[in-house]
Structures are given as C-alpha cells and as structure tokens.
Length: 302
Length: 236
Image (cartoon, rainbow over all chains, first blue to last red; front, top):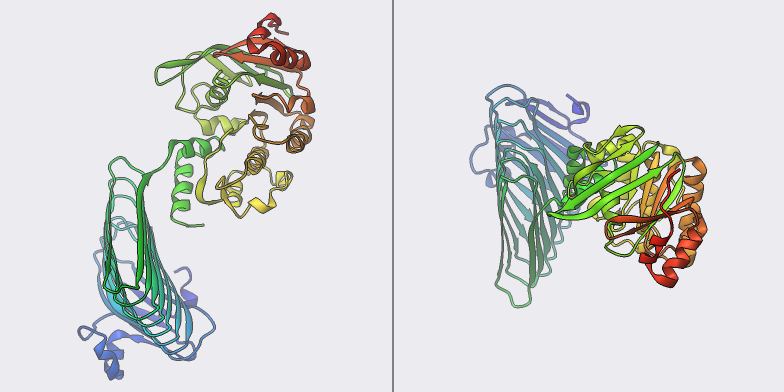
C-alpha cells in the first residue's frame, strides 16, 4: 500500500498490520491499552475490541501517520480510538481512512476521544476516501485543556454512500480550536453534527464547513457553538450545489450563556456560476475539468 | 482564409443582438473593432468563443477552413482561439499559478507580462483593472494561440498602462505573427498598435471597414459612430 512504509499505525480490515513507535510515543491496539493502562478506561465507553491508542508523551520530530483501510468485501469495522497528547507537546498527525476498492460494501464505524493536555498543540489532517457503496460513521470528542491548541482538518476526498459525523469539542481556559471539514459529495447522504463548547475564559474556536453537493447528494449539517464563558467563536458554513438534484441543509446555531462572550456565524449556499464555467472552458478546460477546479477552489484544495 | 465570420446572427433570450456580421482576418493580421457601448462587440467575441448564452441563429464561423460554430468553447480554445475577457469572473480558492499550470501549453510564455506578484493570489479576486488585463494576457499567452480576441483590453487603463499593455501585445502577439482582433470602445490603444483594418460596429452590424484607423477615429470623434457609414466597406 502506498505510504505504508512510513505509517505508525496500519490496520487493514480488522487486523492491525503494523505498529511503529517513534521515541516518546506509545501506540497500541485499543484493547491492549485498556489492559496495560488502567487510566485509559475512563475514556473508553466499553472495553474496545478494535481501534488504536496513541499516547504522545514526549516531543517527536516527524508527523504521526495512521492508516485504516478496508480491503475485503462486506467488512465491518467498529473502532474505539484514543489519542492523548501530554502537556506542552506539539504533534502533527496525518490520518487516512479509506477503502482500497470502489465496491466493497464496507462499514466503518469509529468513535473516540482526543485529549489535548495543557499547552499541547495538535495539527491533525484527517483524510477520508471511500468506495461508492460504503457506509461510514464517525463520532469524536475533543477535550482541550488550558492553553491547548487544535487545528483539525477533515477532508472527504472520495465520499461513501452514507456518511455520518459527530464531533464535539470542549475547550477550557485560553484553549483554541479550528475545525475545518470539507467534502465533495456524489451520490452521498452526508449527515454532520458538530458542537463547539467554549467552557473556559478566553477560549476561542472556529467551525468551518465547505460542502460541495454533486449528483443526487443530500447534505445536512447541524453546527453549534455554545459559549459558557467570556470566549470567542465563529461558525462559517458554506455549501455549493453542483447538481440539479442535490440538496444542502445548513443549520448553524449559537447558544450563549455569558454576557461577555462573542459568537458569530455566517452561512450560505450557492451554485456554480455559468460565467465561471464558460471562462475556464474558454481556457481550454473541458466542462468536467472546469467544474473540478471550481469545486476544489471552493473546498480550499490545492 | 484564416478566419471568417459569415452573416452571423446571434440572439440571447430571444433578442437578436448580432444582425448579420461579416468579418475576415488573415494569419498574423491585426484588426480592430470599434463601436459604442451595447453595439454587440463583446457578444461577437463571446459568440466566436462559443459561450452557450448566445445562440447562433444563422451564419458561419470558419477557422482554418473549418466551421467551428457547433464546437464547445474548450474545443475552440484548443484549436487556437483565445479571448481576453472584458470583465473576467473571480474564481475563489484557485490561485492564478494553479490555473496557469492547468492551461499552459507553452512554459516559455511564463513571466513575460510581469505578473509574478499575482501568481499566489486567487484568480481575478480583488484585482485592480490593470492587474486583470495583465492576468488575461498571461493566460492568453500560455494557451499558445493562433488567433487572439482582446475585448476592451485598454478599458479603465491610464495612458501609460495602455502603452505598456500595447507593447506586450505588439511584442508577444503581433511580432510573432499571431492574428489579433482588438475590440475597443475608446480606441486609445490603436495609436500604439496601428491596426491594418478598423471595423466599426453599430447596433449589431459592421457598418464600416477601413484601412485608415486615424481617419475612422477622427470621424467618430467629430461626428459619432454612425457617420462612419460613409467610409466604404471593402474586401480584399
């Protein structure tokens, strides 16, 4: 598999194929972490039968790479994952979840917790690339302690038939989080739930959605920012319709229970302009190439 | 003939805009089309390039002996026709360098119009008038065209910038034997480029076709576009 050589955690179907631990980082199958480290039990809902545990205890130079793939027909993955980053550690993570073929009828379910301790900083690139018959459900909770930082970029490059995501971020004092989610959907039902809870003073966060709805896609996004302290937050949801039969529903919500909190939102849904298409086609691009370029620009893909 | 438009009638939303346009260009020839606002100059340019917004009712567009009226815009561009837009749309999230990378046929054409500072910016987003024109010219050159239509390339430019743009056109297109159809409302740029033939378009028709651009400009300045009818239409 491409890139497998450098991967720190590699799972294919339901088998862990490789674990490689850089110095200062513990990586285990989640079930073994449950046995070996008692303290992890408070983070797992049940004793995990599948999933990974990554514990960044010391600073590491290179990005951590994880890859979870489906390679056989009708596989069901039910993972419980846990990532813990200790105080003041800065790490980059590149995670890939994918199907190796288009028509495997796979089911991928991943839930987990991401704990970023005091002063730690995490840059997380999470790429999903699925087959057109797969069903995918992910549900993550992010806990950011005081002064913690998170940049989480979730990209759906190849969408599955059905995709459900549920992300919940809880930020303590002076913590900051940017969660960006982008997807180009074709024949996909995509249901997004996300909430950012600003619990601590001076916490700040942004939820950004870029959703392109192509042929027969239904996208529904419920995004919420809740401010419980003097904190700042912004919701930025944009949808782009690229097919007559596509539907996008964006429901941004702001809930404020502190007088000095400042939370804002913007939401819009547009369609691809004929003028842009004509312009690019007059530069020699085919209609599909022009459309792809416009969509990739909208999704901030280079 | 290198490029011929024959009795072209074009409509948009059931309104006839071009009412029988005839035009001929030789390989490497520089011609201009002058005309007031709303006379149909930009519609002619867009119809030549195949913008589906404009429906060709009758007539032919022949390029290198082939009727291209039913080809898509991409196909026309790939045959070697390029149009510089008067008001190009912004493409959010796409850097000019990315677009150039996708469309470039000739790497040698890069950096000839001095747009280095624009490469990292999104296509046409918040560009000044001059920046838009330079970006258009760079894109056109990257396509390695045989025929270039420049729609109001001098609009909104001061005299110094107009001269700069004219110099690029002269150096990169005219001197390289690339045919140019220069569409202009003001005519300012003509004195720097001295086209071989000037056409005057009024209300969807070319009413004058003349070799002396100075004479046509003087007539327009003194008496308006309509009086250009007195200059004979001619064909070679």
